[in-house]
View 1: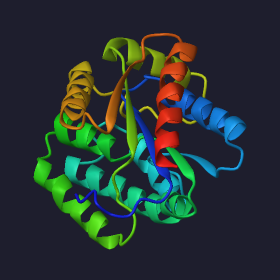
View 2 (view 1 turned 180 degrees about the horizontal axis):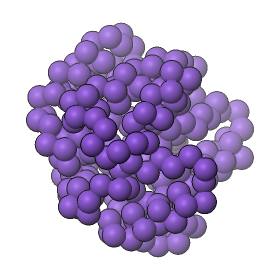
View 3 (view 1 turned 135 degrees about the horizontal axis):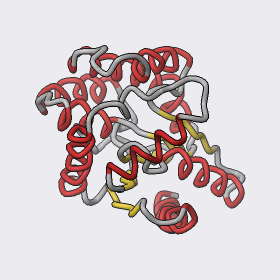
Length: 227
């Protein structure tokens, strides 16, 4: 994908395996940005989801049997949701000069459907080319990606404890075997190696506050450079 297009706004994504604390850190970062930079539009969003159409797709992706979708079908559903989310929520906020903080983005698909499900890199290259060529002003690539790393055994256990307290069980991926989750972690390590300028590894085994402070310190520096 091209990364030379004019950049408007600031796009931050949080990535990681199940139970790594992405949603909590997304919320904490957005809340603090709103407190310290009240003049900035700050948008908190998530994937799959983030727009009405994408939220509808979320339900069929995150519920049901683990083999509900073939890998290619699963990938295309994620990108159908992503395109709607990008066009209706993310891009309009960026074009207004806002800060968008998103819980998961395309790195999740590369890791979950690519590294863990076995789909080749060419699938992602083809889809990303379509996305990138459709945008005349804004590059599809996030400005910063925080990858929250945790041992998959601990992460899945955390996630299952959280899910047990909610009515709608979005646990389709948590119920996949541990070998799958180990591949997810290894995939994120590879993304970190290949995208060191964009991605930062965050040790997610620590306290919520320690994790937040690491993210906050980097985000403030990024915001200062960006503006």
